[in-house]
Length: 51
Image (tube, rainbow, N blue to C red; front, top):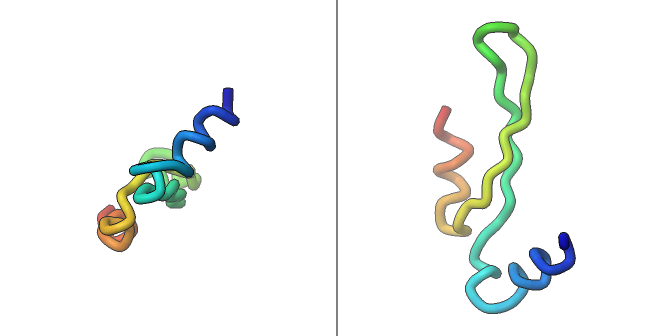
């Protein structure tokens, strides 16, 4: 099933998206969590600037 998703993202409009992984500190426990999101190439810098 993963092969289908990868193949879809490499063709057509899928090339304009990037998977971004951001490390976020939890306010309750103080531990770090990883937040993953598919972001348009034009909005990558905005994604990492926002909290």
